[in-house]
Image (tube, rainbow, N blue to C red):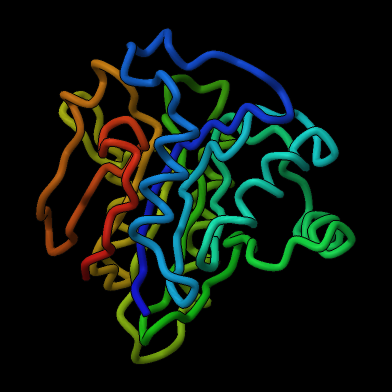
Amino acid sequence: MAIYALGDLHLPFGREKSMEIFGEGWKNYTARIKANWEKLISPEDTVVVPGDLSWAISLEEALPDFLWLDKLPGRKLLIKGNHDYYWCSLTKMRRFLKENGIISVDFIHNSSVSVEGLSLCGTRGWFLDSGDDTHIFQRELGRLKASLSAARPGEKIVCFLHYPPLCREFDCPEIRSIMEEAGVSSCYYGHLHGASHSGAFNGMHNGIRYACVSADGVGFMPVLVRV
């Protein structure tokens, strides 16, 4: 069994919206995701999607996207992204999936999931642009701490964020320090598209391996998680 990550699927089956504003590389992207996924992922594997699964603005509208994802092989664990407007309480989302027969999808939210001896943790993260969103930023710091605190003792910790905690034009020392103090071994993030990928940071920093896994930046191919 292996663990993979692929962010920013931006599935359009419930609410159609073009991604080609970020370049022609997004043409036929859902077909490419499906083909790559089915070629690489086995039913025993786990794939973490660190945000922006769907364009839908409600669970009901996201149903076609969840059904599409459920048919792909492997277990899927979702992190909230800035465009996941369908996101609500864990209880409501899990009940909705169960009622619709979706069995391979779950969420990481104020929680950790143990897979193959690794504790998978994470949250959306945030860009602190102004004082107006300080409360959102502090809430995300709290959610990250809660998730990391839920890691199983003795397991290596892999963290998944939607917003990049570190890139050429942005650094979030608050989030980085929380991960460093918790002993996170690697961090996978998304959010960046098109020309923004040139600013992504991929490599080691203060003991943590960082990698950007937003779909267009990795050729719509799930990325093997390394610790």
